[in-house]
Image (cartoon, rainbow, N blue to C red; front, side, top):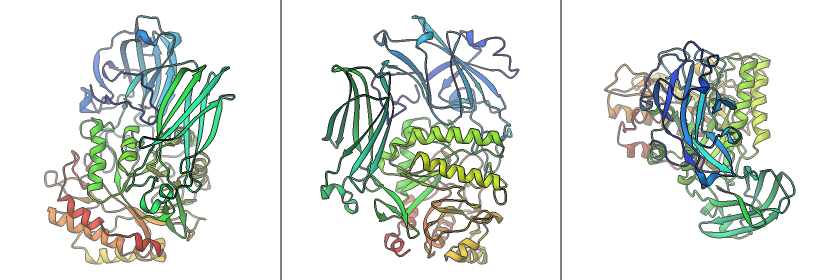
Length: 599
């Protein structure tokens, strides 16, 4: 079975049942399944390997043509020891709209292709073999759906890739008490040494207590038992206890950073007269992000981010990593090359990736998959799903920034359109209203409105032979005045009516994209190299131009891997290095901490 690990690593319950594996499957190209009540069927014409989409090789189908409606079906048996519990059916992600049926009953619906959801199926269970059916609708040509890099034409081209339809993350069952924990929010306050806990409890009753246990590397720091009186429980806990060795972020202390990925383990236990009703394991990291005088600070000291653009595609699984080890490998290879983080580009990544980033010490910029066009439907779809995403990923210390919009995708007239500018501003303030612990980049790339980082994309470095073009590129990055006057891709850095605040750090958040793959000479990139030596030399040129800048406060290089027809990765699509990775690490490895202080 693929993908056997617990799929929600920052909200763990010990009892669960993995439903990945063989499901029955069918296309419904005539869209007759609902009227013909396929939700009552106990078999469909094909098989598919969940959690892989039918477009992928690992699904066992590998059909990439348009099929806007698909169905899944399988029978399950509920473990007898789960008797008297509520049974939840959980989905990591289903793209895009779905209806869930159990024994013919509609038990839940969800819209949004990038985030998890749960349905309570208890009242539809019959006590023997239970028939689960999932209906999915994924309109392939709808340009108002947040789809990221999934192309609305049948064949991939340029920067657009194969679509993902249907179930593409783990499906699982779990038993839950009628009185249970709905969510947990853990907010670190590094300056005071406290962590703020907020949790929601469903089905509160008399004589209910909540035990909170917090430990660090096996040392118990907090063990508190709280009487539950309200559905929402909030408490503040002192985890540093004013001990200098814990608070000293310069030496690592007990703070989280890429260099010191320290995590606190948390147990939340619901008890009724000492009887355990629910038990959830989670964790958090003590870290702080802020900006000051045009400089990015992590844990109250200047920090230079060296990020790599990571699109999260795999040759055999597309958006779905074939195994948990594939997430680990991507982070490991990125760190070997001297990067301290990634920008997850136009994809909301699987929680398992974020879990490994938390543990291994790897910065993540969390980004929304954008729509292609703008209307009232795209606004509603984006804001609803983005709110779910921020809620899901709130507790991950590795996420330091949110990117709700990218390169004016979904807001193509933002330069002059007051309405689309208002949407960008709304996404900025919506994100801030949900999360005050991270930075928000309103429209990464260009045509920015309100933003915490001025993220600029510039691929105008040219090929190695184009010295004049490179010198001009280098000059455009040199000073604040030059970079703000530059028009990468013919776009202004800020939208009409907005201008740069010198307290806002400037980062080059996309650049490079050097194409090199001797096995696919027709592949696409922003410049090209013919040999490994040329590739390394061109990489050095692009990084040197960034390091030569007096104002750039960090960067995100394009990109980690090739993806389909794009061959501009540092690694091939199947994660093979294109050169000696130590050479990339040496180029990235300049210590810029002293330089960043003077900004």
